Length: 289
Image 1 (tube, rainbow, N blue to C red):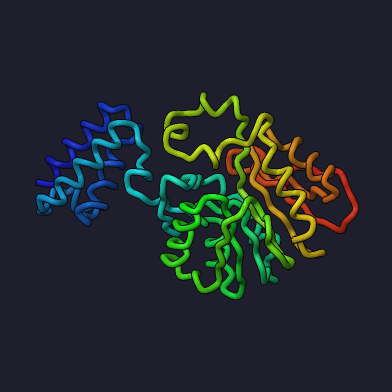
Image 2: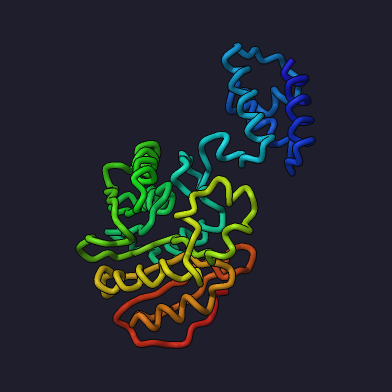
């Protein structure tokens, strides 16, 4: 009976310290057996083949060992879309959706035609924006060949591959032309902090996507230098930042010769996105409400 299997899995996950073992048990059963929550909770009998049983056990063992559920499943939902994960990509977080929301707000009624996503990882930012703007095209860069392969697959999965180009390079090196929107979620964690991150992050997200250098700002310095020749005069750049970088990143923007326009908080009220532009006069910024 599925109800017995459900309770067994839930008990094992609870013993492993999983925060919501009931929910995760149902997610695993849905993924492997195709069972609905209603059928699982009602105790309906849902047959499992030996291969399905073995797959479920293997996934359960990985989760018991502390591997994040998204890594066990191999995908993460972001902005209502499914994104394949790989060892070369960061696991997209809900906070990054703040960047998508900001872009949609800034370009309401006049979508950008050309988008550049620097350090794309899974491709979740560019792909989500292309999904929202059917007339837009985009270029995504990453230093990791594995991340770019995953991003290409995700573009195919989410039906925007014909409008996306993926380039292996460091930040925006070698990219040409002007873009109406430049976006990036670069590594921004201070190097000395990385070893102390939660085990779910430290052991499973690639260090390349986490380590922002001695002060957490190395990536921004490189990106801002390249951005000035790539952002159109009327364009907007949106960068994700750490919760404690609401002053340091805008300062770097000013030092680069660009203009910080706003700091946008995430749903928890923490600084999350810096908006900047080129070709306009500098002014003091305040966080968006």
